[in-house]
Amino acid sequence: MFHYVDSISFKRTLIMNTLRSLFTAALLVGCVLITGCGTSAQVEARTPEHMAGGERIQLQLNASAMGDAEAVSILRERLRADLSSNGWLARGNGAANRTLEVRVTHYRMRPESTRILTGIFSGKDSIVSSVILKDAAGRVLMHSTVESHNSLAVGTSQGLLEDHADKIVGMLRGDD
Image (cartoon, rainbow, N blue to C red; front, side, top):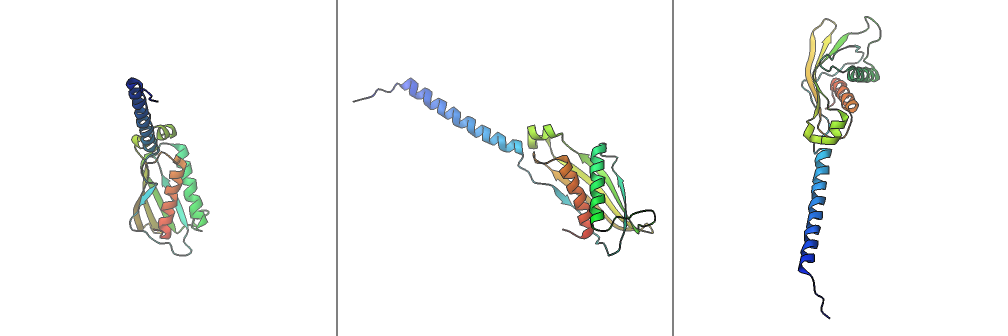
């Protein structure tokens, strides 16, 4: 028994299958691009200064470049918590023998919706700070720049700010 195959319906089926495969491949590539093929937060720091025992630090945060009160609060609280957990945060007036000046020089944070919808195409979140550690006489013991970036579509602005604070205090500890 011989079956006759209609060449028009065969071509139509072949075209439909090809289009489905192309659509699936395009959807897969789109998903990869939306999630962002980047790296997680990165930090660059120079000339770390290790803390000696018994040091007490007064924190001075200048975050006028941020322009976002909630972000400033997140960064300040995380810096205080990290310094306190290491036993370095000075309590009360006159208790500090070192001053940690953190000046945010660059701050760019994508809105959550933009990060999710456009991924790496919307740029990257970044925060750059100048970090200066001074002794009680005001002499500079350390001057460094800490840069944190996140080009992924995943993660939150709070996570990047907390990671930035952790890296600043980690630099004081001598973490690499």
